[in-house]
Length: 299
Image (cartoon, rainbow, N blue to C red; front, side, top):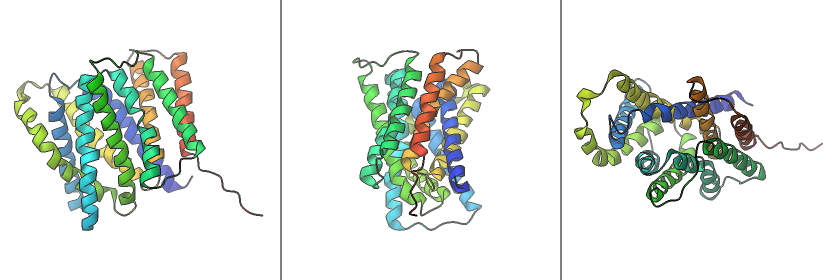
């Protein structure tokens, strides 16, 4: 594996470690201390400010007008729709349902990549997706079951739309990552995303009682803004400079493993055969999706 490709894989691995920890950390914030859309307001505002500040300290990159229009569209799918629908959907469904739907993202990405950017659906990739999904679903369902009751139907639909929008974002942002620096793309995507987010979130921000939020919750909010939003988004999109959207999205299968490891080390769970089998399926899936096809060299 080339050094650049190894760096890309490490970047997306780091992003998914951050995302995996975010489920545990963000859960303690909402909705008691801060409503979902108030959190999203601070995520997008903080990321936008950070990306503009960093670019001011580096060389500014000019973006073509047609690409700015594409980034505006990406902001709708990758920032506004993605973040808002996930949190709102999670409030209306169960964590089990949301997790199962989210690990379906690589399947959506595989199909979208084929039709949008012409990425070939190989048998190897398909096998990897199936193995990874099976392992992740096996691991998630050990704590409950998927339900299609009327109480969770709307929440399931919102999370599914969120997963689809994020998958489309990964596919559509790939060509831009080959043309511009990740910092440039993220700066404009979050700037445009803020335009979508402010009208639907500012009301919840105003209604938030900041005076009663304890210090440990402020640290959790800082993690969500700095790590889950700024670092994770940057690392995720940096990886797309070198690897395909399908390979990138396959790493989402590692998030249930991380959640289990956190629970085990915290003494809230224990290592069982379920974790071992699921982990083997997940790692096998990620391997097959990312394994390069060996080309035969003519004698």
